[in-house]
Image (cartoon, rainbow, N blue to C red; front, side, top):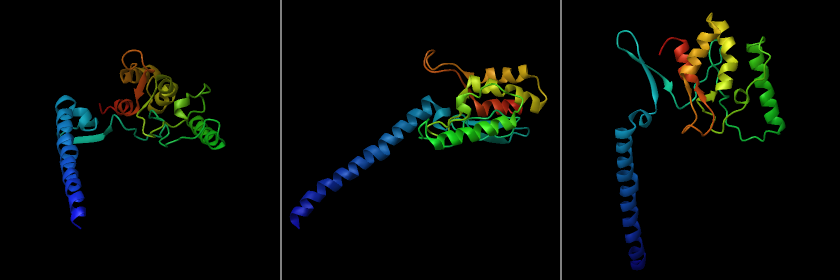
Length: 186
């Protein structure tokens, strides 16, 4: 019994010390630094709009996809996590259903549908689509809203982010921000 306590006492002490160091102090320091240097990102990059009368309305996060499925909105990537092979029968069926749905929403558009509108991202909550995917939808949105296509494209351009560090990746469009701008909320 005595040797058991001799072994357990340092183990329990070490557990308590590491819990305080890693679970309390480290977390507190990192949270404090994030709040000082990156307050918007540390708080979830929430999109908040102050309405008439001073009431604040939260519409979501710029970093997490919101679902839009009506013709008057920019539609993002499917919100499902997919690790399916591009050649799998299940993936081909899912993509086929998404193509059919998009074609049904915009039957006059016979151009090729950009891949990111019919395939899910790895996380399933990607808030961005490619500039090509946004431009593909501009005529449908303009028609549904009674706007000119140029007005819709101007809003899309405003919320298009360039390549990371100027050379990594492709330009992307934030779906939530475009839709809030289309609704006149921002």
